[in-house]
Image (cartoon, rainbow, N blue to C red; front, side, top):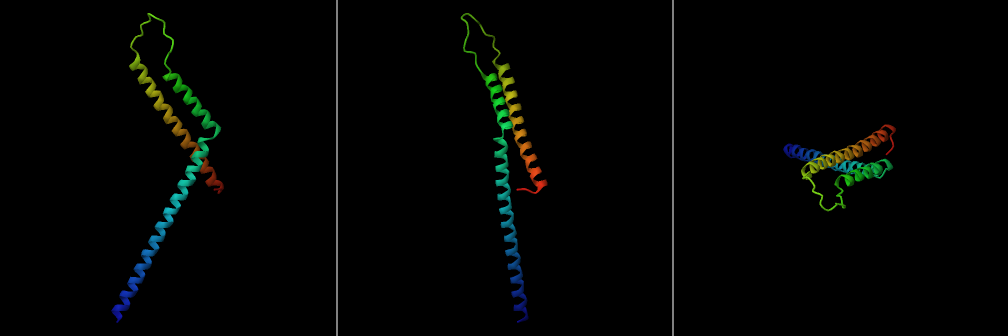
Length: 122
């Protein structure tokens, strides 16, 4: 009988530990979802901020200028093959601009998040 009581209490404590662990996992999952939602909202706010939109417009203009083809070509004009050189420069500049835009968005989002954390506002 003593053996049954000991095994019963072990099962209860094991079941209680499992239940506690499950509750902790659920709480962690809920917090991850809440934090992900908050991060998405803050990122969206920063991406629609006037400075970010101005940056995006500037980047779009630069890329448009780099990739714009000349529509007017006089007859008899022979162009030298500079396509490979232009493509390399364009790709390098486009990569650099994309990285700068990403860094800007992440930095402003992080900065806003840190300010709100310091002040204690959600």
